[in-house]
Image 1 (cartoon, one colour):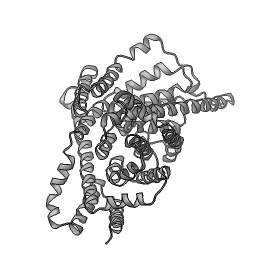
Image 2 (image 1 turned 180 degrees about the vertical axis):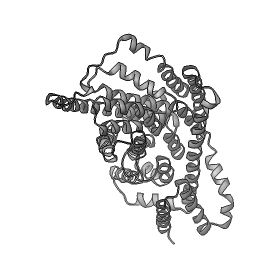
Image 3 (image 1 turned 135 degrees about the vertical axis):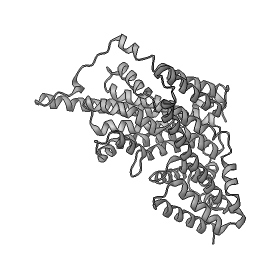
Image 4 (image 1 turned 90 degrees about the vertical axis):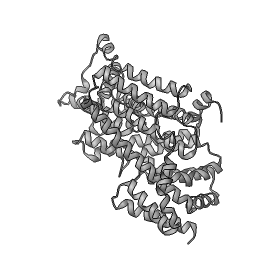
Length: 449
């Protein structure tokens, strides 16, 4: 059996097992173990635990459960609600200010928590009811939160980027810095659409009222005094200071990523104790329990994905597939388009963690051969995987929104996220035309590669 035939069989069996409904971690582990049994020396089965341990014995991966603990501490507290309320209080006079407030709140919370589902849940539970109360359509309210939540895997600290840095053997600090520019770009694109859409919805609400319909709360003139605005800051500023402090510790060379993650988790727990009085065991139990469950699930997926990639490498599947792609002699940009399309298709049924670890051995060698900067590509790939979080059929953020706003029909949520998918496509195109959006900041701070 040729390498490419074996690779096709490997991929086909993987799809069959995944579509059986089996959890992804077990599906990858069973496929990898099965091919080890039939196509590798019998002794290789005795090394499964050793291979998984060696692949995961990375000091960089240690930061994942620590960042998850930091995210859970912030996500399980009222911090998201307070952050949203503070930003809305200061921006309510801007046209579409409520939509912009949700985008900014999602961006800041994503940067603090590093989790897309946590961002959707924390900001959406407060933001969606407020937008609907003020006359925003349910689809737009759901769409802007679902799209804003995707920033959790782009803005540092990002667990997805940690895994990409390990798989591509790139600098994590440089990769984190490279995510800031595109993250700001997406925030501006989302906020601009919020202003456009808000003006449209204001006109619709005004027309309904002028025709004798009900006066929407959107037409009411809200007013907050300076005292009320200032009173919103004390609960929010400490978390923003935490975010800045963690970034300074990491990029200032004062701590490694793992040390920074541990520091951020401890400070987040300390802030919860001081600001919200969350310090008793019964209060901390949901935070610690959530961290353990998510860390266990994620690390199991990582371990099985790495075993899956190890088998691909041992059987020369990944090398042959990479050589086949190089042998097609595609132009540089056609190669990139084909690979990104493949990532989009994988995004229909796989989480970003599995996509990175399963595809890295195949796609990175041809990209390196074509002369692409792998830091830049990591950012582009992350934006494309962000799209997978909000496009059907599996978009995780869509189902998070359905959980916190079950009365919004699924079709309204899907149509609500569609404009933001187009904005993400625009962001990818801008990154291709102006790569310095991603590479400029790391080159300025850490020097050109």
